[in-house]
Length: 442
Image (cartoon, rainbow, N blue to C red; front, side, top):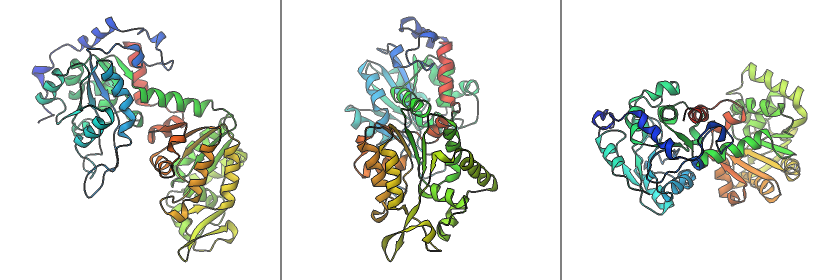
């Protein structure tokens, strides 16, 4: 079907009709939004018999050879919102994206619909159209409790253009779909740092609310980053020191943040910047993203906030096919570090077991290899065995927690990547700001 047709015969209803839902909703003054965060939630609306346009983020790993989804774990994160909407008698059409145009993982959403159906326990029909006649007919035929998934929204050429919410509201996508719905719900937390048409445009022209995932992510993570129970410890592993540095700088300024552990390649890159030896092969990876400015900022962080920063004191490398540990001063000259060593693990675990809030972003080693999974496994055990409120963020962290059987023991698991980082930095997020503006307007 041609999703780029304007569907003019189907969309002549005034956008003002979208506002009619206000007459029958509960507590919709902006001063009384139940969330307390400046935007509406599902608690503010009666959705029975209403058409609801729901934006979710189900962007999932895809096998490059088969072009099939590797798993549906991310898809399951928005199921609570969908289930609530359909159980309350809403008529739900879902917008989502997968990959980027031109990339191998830019695929249709039919398999995503199957996963959603499995998780919901009821059929989710895939509609291979966005706002052409086929999509419009499917939307008009929705009955109470029905759910359909529309075509990958990134097939709409203007979706990813850098525009303001008001500019996106004038797009063909928004102009065509908005009159067909009574309410827009955004549950795509992992994409809320982006100002794309389907993410911010609808909130300009119609009543809008945060879905349950969006609400929970923002409420939980804001508390963790701004008002954690103390002592609080934040762990950064992963690979890119340059990405972790601005977040560490921001967190280190906050009185409520007690400890920042930097492990993985990010930790050893930090050590290299400070003049420590990390082995030539590790150094080659570390120096790729490090500029003179990064060096200056890292040294300044240690000089001003060094009491909060904790770095590895030893490392594990591969020697004759086995794991071998060295203190940093005795590392072989050509070392390629694959994990933190036992002394670092013990020191970090001491901090973790005495903490009341722990946040982990990125594993401290190459946990996919059994010989070098020790650091990741033992830190995760410490995080989840104590009494702390523990939060894990990022795909690799979640994969590691799942591999070692502790994912269900985490207090909270975030779906965010770029959105999570932006929230940690205290920066505005376009989707959240659009929802807040909509709460004032409607």
